[in-house]
Length: 206
Image (cartoon, rainbow, N blue to C red):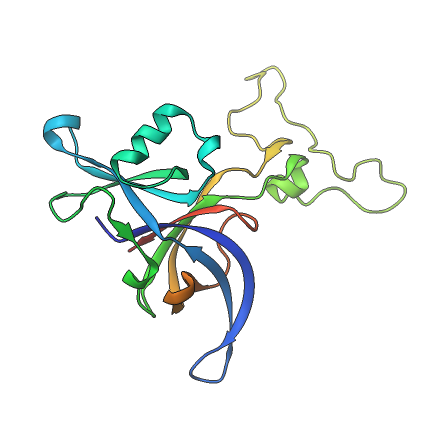
């Protein structure tokens, strides 16, 4: 598998680069993760490893969850994500995955859930221009006409309309690693990544 780790978005800041320029970075608390399950071709029909992240209290986990993590000699975790691999021989149950496997300058893909915006109109959701802003106009932020007359007498599929916005799975590719602070499990990547503070992120090396 390409290197994969789970993390939590802490927020954004800026750091100085080697060329004395300020670089906007997102601070991610990445790992440590534990391999809570190894899936094999013979037993499961495909090869993958299960990564678990985020400690939770023992009394908040039910018996099946505790039993699952007991096999990996680990306490229960909040988040579990599966990563496909070609060969599971190099992975062991209970193995720890830490941020020091990543290096500065490396290119990553970061996946997360975008911020929820609730129910929004067409101007915010689809970047419609809207109507005239003058007081005499009665058409400002409405979507306008959406259908046709007698032929074909229907609304075409895919038309942008008001509705639920955000809270979707988003992946940002080619995100560069600016700095790795291994002793604090921190990963500083250039630019923004999906979601709000405290959101779960899945980080994969390209």
